[in-house]
Amino acid sequence: MSTVPQSSTGAGRYAPSPTGELHLGNLRTALLAWLFARSTSRRFLLRIEDLDSGRVRPGIAERQIACLTALGITFDGEPVVQSRRLATYQETLRSLAGVTYECFCSRREIAQAASAPHGAVPRYPGTCRNLTEAERRSRRLTRPPALRLRADRAWQTIQDALHGEITVEVDDVVLRRNDGVPAYNLAVVVDDVFSEIDQVVRGEDLLPAAATQAFLTKLLGHCPPTYAHVPLAVNVEGRRLAKRDGAVTLSELAAHGLTPDAVLSVIAQSLELAAPGEPASLDGMLERFDPGRLPREPWVVVPSGGLRSGT
Image 1 (cartoon, one colour):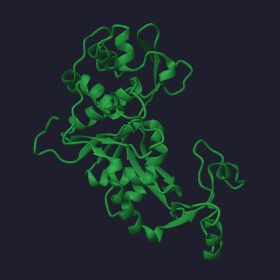
Image 2 (spheres, helix red, strand yellow):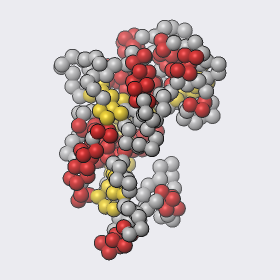
Image 3 (cartoon, helix red, strand yellow):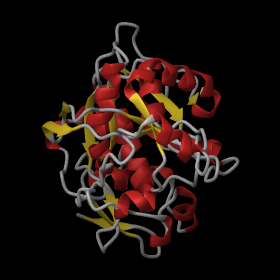
Image 4 (cartoon, one colour):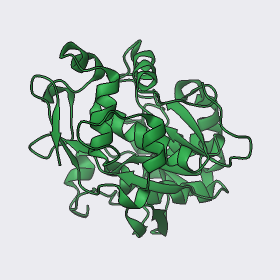
């Protein structure tokens, strides 16, 4: 693991889930998070988000770290592993008891609720928000409850380096699933606070969650981080890149003769931090890095017997 000057303040992070090998889109986002952090003299941390035990695959976290290392991406300190922090999440939930409530709704029931807003991001319609104690006791007999944040229709503003100032209504998100597992929106906030993360760089598909996470951070008595939600890598049909789209992981690309250095150059070119055919290095990319000049459109990846890309 590398170190940065002691005078640096704050930290950025990359937080993969160990459910499969990192593909080009994941690697590009990791590289951007590294560039944002290092260009501002921040520490850069790794977090393993492995709470979804049904999808976590043994050995994948180690392979993900190996892929990042192969590209030259460095981290400071040891990784934070979420599955080792369950007691901390439970303690935080107890501290939030005054602003949470039990929810007995299934995903299907929420989707079918007549009062549910119909938009790109479904919002909880409030079905269980005002149940009486007698109603909760009755429902516990047939279904264990999840635990939701009682946001009370609050509004939250965030600052995003690529999207500007965004103000949205905070959703009553799940903080603990009905199987007792801490939910993503709780764990990510608790871990960012624990690690003193003040800069979050991630895919723009997570932008809708940012305001709620910022609101929860403030509830815990801390300042929300700044954000940069970066464009995704997509296939030719405009869908988020996935392994089914062909050779998109380092191991698959290696089978077509592409070294990690060659893959780094392709990613650098997609960010306009290297010219076509120019070998890339992290130091060279860092020297040229300017968030204001990053491409704002998705990166269209066309794996075909190797790798070529277009925007």
